[in-house]
Image (cartoon, rainbow, N blue to C red; front, top):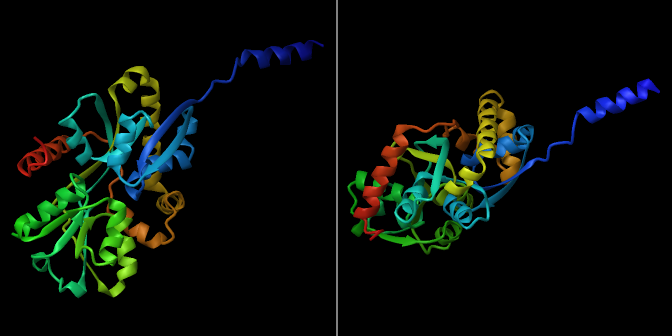
Length: 293
């Protein structure tokens, strides 16, 4: 009898089980969101008492808008949507960069349009997503190759519509990232030509939320960053497993293409001074291009 009372007492001493904190994260649906995907898949969020729901979006711009609308708590996006929205509001916070790359955007074109070198883009129609990282890259690419933007026709389209536009000949080329470039490349095969320029634009990928959310949920923010820190270590020590988990989440059939893309990213938690410099460069371009009043 004493033993029973003892066991019951020990059980009660544990107290009620703590309820997990609910957290929703809006993701740009690409490999650059890897740390968040890994933190969920490897259980690092769960270990910190976070019940995380991932919601995928075609772009970081849309993920950020969902966060502003209160549809998700946190969002991932490149530096460009942060810069664009900074002209309109100041009620949000960059918690951390979670990845960076100097080769995150490039151009794909059709060879049958007599495009074999960057100079061949003169007189052609180039598609891209307006006021985005890939739009900024296109401007920097043309500037470096001494091609005036008046010498090309820039057609603004949604990211998801660009591959078919190129395949159907509605544009001669487009500036984008994967998975959209890969979709067009698979369809065009030998008729595709790609133009890369590593280093022309060092891009940062960030975790962003509303200032009000930070004020109300400091513990959740702390636990989130700790979980992403664990994912960062895992990505360095378990590369093959990490790529498989990312491939499954993003439903990418060709793991080899993902591995090649993954190699171009530096997955690390940081808030570097160079992020501010990038935002300033983008802001100057944004004003100079007449994209803001």
